[in-house]
Image (cartoon, rainbow, N blue to C red; front, side, top):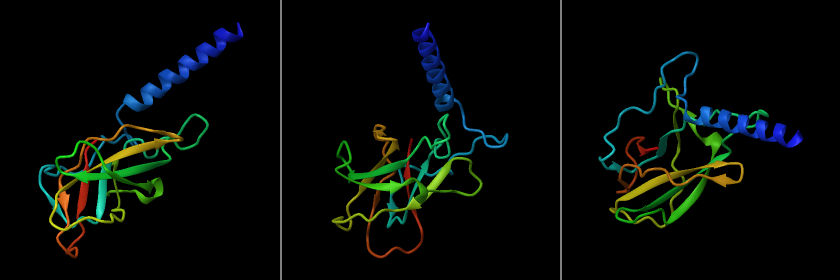
Length: 158
């Protein structure tokens, strides 16, 4: 009997998890609003921020602890198949973009050893406790050509 109850609870938790992950995010009855439509193929020059749609950013587990504990930002030269360098970004670094329900921005992490004039792509991994997700879809291309002129963002596609 105890095994049946344990299996029932595990199944219920799994279904609740799937419902939470797969259902659209709605805040206070609003229609979900993601990041503003950017041409993902355009090259961002001298980015200062990372922008991503993070619908799980404010999600909590049944015990009230945050479902997401952080992110890993990875970058790679255009043409490579996966990030070759990475750095952690704290969950608290991401702030909600005004007029959206799950578009967040964070300061671009320090990227050492990046030569000027080369195109790069970026991706994010979501950290849930000690488990990391797979890399997100790649961002729009970006590069550096000297001092930043105005705030711009690398747009991560989920």
